[in-house]
Length: 375
Image (cartoon, rainbow, N blue to C red; front, top):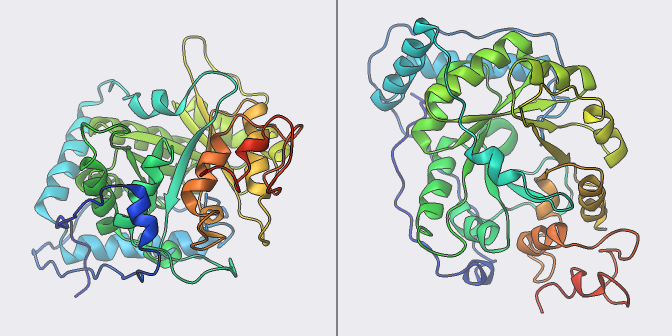
């Protein structure tokens, strides 16, 4: 019987990100889900059907309604097989909070971390085991190897695509990344918050994320709508989790803000202009702050246009960029590895003065080409 389990994995931290990069030939290996035979006859859910194409930061893009329905079926089976008691306890906490119908104070730690001064950009690096149609590499290193790379090269947070169909990951991978990040406690840089990037259709997935150690979850507005976004934000807050709401249109963005979202991510759109159009006319109530994230889609080539797009999104006022497949385009290239791409996206360069596709040159930003970033 298949069931997700939240059994912690024993992780040994690598001393530095360079050590991780040195193990580039290490093959990826999947975490095998264990069996959980705790008896459970039924579990109430609050799943909702929506006739909307699902758009998110990675390969869930444009896969359609069947993705949502498949996820709902997964959740039902997970409930029938018997979730761990730790998850059920957190689920009960969500339900108790919902029954009280009290105002829940929303956590803001991640929002604050992602929102820096104007003219800078923060990076969310998404980990996934499977790349859809990249055409460049077939294997991604295990999370324990890439997690320190993300941290030591300047990412603000790590997301794990916790959907086995589309990203090859499970909630066990979230546990692995959380445990590796926790090993950096007391170091500089310290542990990064971990985001559960899943297609949320039911509050039990929020309980799973919290049980795995995640600090935030993603919710897609086009799948669940404004009412469920509002409910999921409250559910997550009852467990101390923040919510990143994925949006694809200006209407969805405004709806997310109206529902109480403090972090929105523009997904499924190519180009900085198209992304900016989604947030350009946002009406934000006085006294509230909303962190805006631009999802950078990978280009089907080996150029580094994604870095330029990150700079342009920064210059248009986005607070953060979410990067997934673009991190892995060059495979294990010693210069264009994920850490170097993160560092270059954070650089103060501008497309007006520099191009990341160049390997040498003069003028502002010349030292921050990918070819020079590690020197």
